[in-house]
Length: 85
Image (cartoon, rainbow, N blue to C red; front, side, top):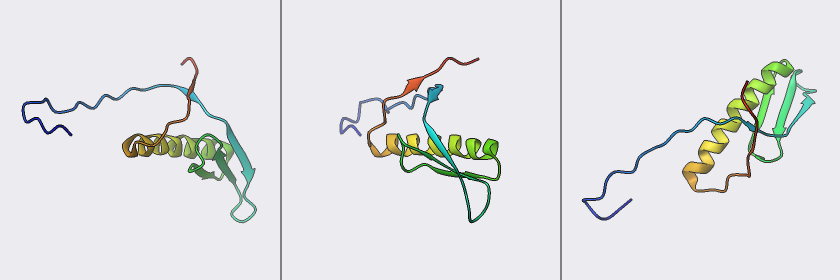
């Protein structure tokens, strides 16, 4: 936040990227389905009844983790990118 009243308001820029993260899927012995974690983002803990559902939940958790880190000024892991398509 700038103390200069004539300074323009900051702009929010949203960029969509396709990044690659290493995910680990494990069978959930208590609930059935699959638990999924991400080594680069330890706060990510997803779950799904199927591998497809667990992967989708992990994708949402990763988006939230990256957004939370950006908002908090916390470090973002080095991203590995993939081509879309």
